[in-house]
Amino acid sequence: MPVLGQTGLNVSSLCFGTLAVSPLQGCNNIIEGSAVLRYGLEQGINFLDTAEIYANYEIIRRAMLGLNHHVVIATKCYAYSQEQMQASLERARQELDRDVIEIFLLHEQESMHTVRGHREALEYLLEAKQKGIVKAVGLSTHAVAGVRAGAALAEIDVIHPILNQAGLGIIDGTLPEMDDAVQLAHQMGKGIYAMKALGGGHLSRDPVQALNYARQVPGVSAVAVGMSSRLEVDINLRIFSGLEVPAQWLDRLQKERRILHAADWCEGCGQCQDKCPQGALRLEQERIRVDQAKCVLCGYCGAVCPHFCLKIIRQG
Image (cartoon, rainbow, N blue to C red; front, side, top):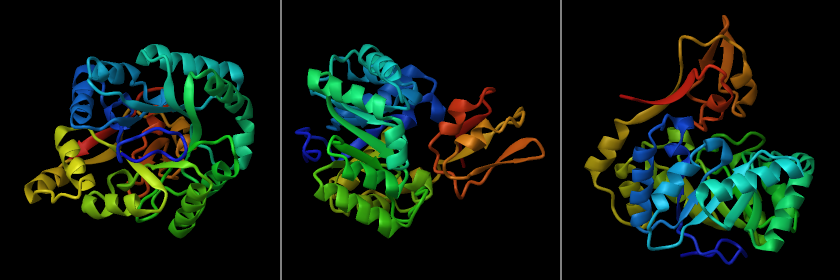
C-alpha cells in the first residue's frame, strides 16, 4: 500500500468515496449503505473518504464493526472558527466511535484567500494534531488555486483535489494547470488523493481509462471513487489491480446511469443555485433546472434545499 505523502499513513490506492452511501446521493437506508461499504472493506480497501455534510458517520461506524483490519478515515467540514471546528471534530470522533481521526480536511477551499478565512479552524486542527487526536491536516478543493494554496502551506499535510481526464468540475483553470498544481504539491511533500475521477458519472462509459488517468498523475497516492453497489466495488477493485473487467459487468454498469433530479414541488428559492460550484443549476420560471452536462453529482445542492427537492437517482 502506498504511503500518503509524509503522513506515514499506508492507504489502499482505491479509496472508498462514501458520498455514494449518504443521503446526499439518495442512500437513506443505513443497513444497505453499511453493507456495501462493509463489502468493500472486506475486499481489502482500508481508506475511506467522508464529510460532515454527508451525514453518514453512522453508516461508516456500522460498516467497521468487528472488521479485522484498521481503516484510515478522512473527513472534512466547512468550519471556519475554533468553536465550529471543535464541535465538528468531536462529532466525528463520537459518531464514528474513533479516538483518533487520521485525516481532517477543510472542505472546498478555493484559494489562499479562503484558507486564510478558515485560519482559526485550521489552527484548532493543528492543535488537535499535536495532541494526537488528528494525524494529518489538509484541504479538499475543486480549484487549481486551492491546490497551489495547499502546496504553499507547510502545515498542510494532505490535499484532496478534483482530477479527471476531461477536466470536469475544475472551477478556475484547465486540466494541464490542475495536473501541474498536483505535481507541485507532490514535490512539496503533500499527500494527494484525488476525487471525481469519473467526472460525476460522465466518464463512466470507459471507467478503466478514466480511473487509470487519475492514478497515473505523478504524486497521486489514491483515488476516491464513489461506490453504491457490490458491482461497482468489484469493477473498481479489478481496475486498480490491473485486471481485466468482464464485459458483462461493464454492460450492467452502463444501465445504472445516475442523474440529479429536481422534484416538481421546488419553490424556486435559489439556495441550491448559489451552492453549486459547477454552475449546473439555474432558475427558470421559479423552478430549478439542471444542466446534466455540467453536474458532477456532488450532491451539495441537496444539503441546502429546505424542501428536499434535489435527489440523485438512477436512470435507465
